[in-house]
Structure formats: structure tokens, C-alpha cells
Length: 129
Image 1 (cartoon, helix red, strand yellow):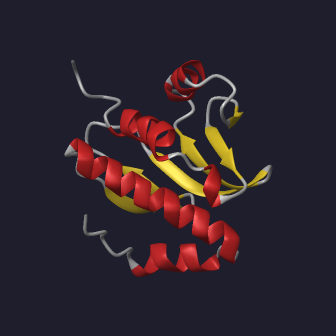
Image 2 (cartoon, rainbow, N blue to C red):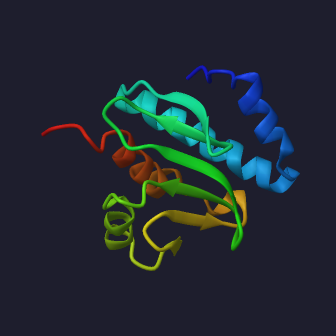
Image 3 (cartoon, one colour):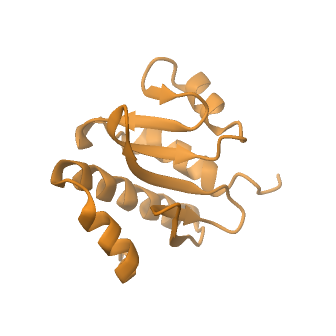
């Protein structure tokens, strides 16, 4: 899949992250776009609260950025059941902060299948059926 180039503003945010963190953030970015492509879902990359954020028309917003308890994190909307569903489907497999984030310290902790399922669920959260 051809990855869209980030806007200059989004690129500047990625560039501001420490190198190891940036590698993880960019890996999550690729997983978001790959998952959206696989599902046939359009996704828009924007900045929200100064963080790279991903919005699909029938989805719930995802964000990726640094975290005080980890190198980087994948954030979901805290008023959804997304993190609860993820925790139930994959008990004990991730470090999770409450109902809002999966925490990572290294890019190797990203699992395309497991975290791709969470991303896919977020991108289609408001879809009926």
C-alpha cells in the first residue's frame, strides 16, 4: 500500500519525538494505514491536542504519541468500550492504562494482528451491523 505523506505539521510533530520513540510512532502509523486499507476504510491524519490522530467516517478517533509511563502509546477514546474489549480478547498481553491506551517501550512490542484488531475496531466503531 502507498502510504500518504504526512502534512508538514504532522511531520514536524513526528520529528520532535526522540528517535526510538519516533520509530515506534511511525510503526503504529503504518499499522493504522495498513489496517484502514485492508478494511477499505478511508482515514484522515490530523493533529488533535498536538498529537497525530486518525479519524475514519464510521470510527472512533485514534491517537499516537508519547506517554509518561512508556516510550509511546496508542490511545483510543476513553468513553468507548474499545480498551475493555481489547483487554478481554487479549488478557494480560499488553500494558494498558485504564480505558484509554496501550503502552509500548519498544517497536518490537507492536503486534500487527493484536493491535491491528484494536485499530480496526476503532476505525469501524460506529458502523452499524
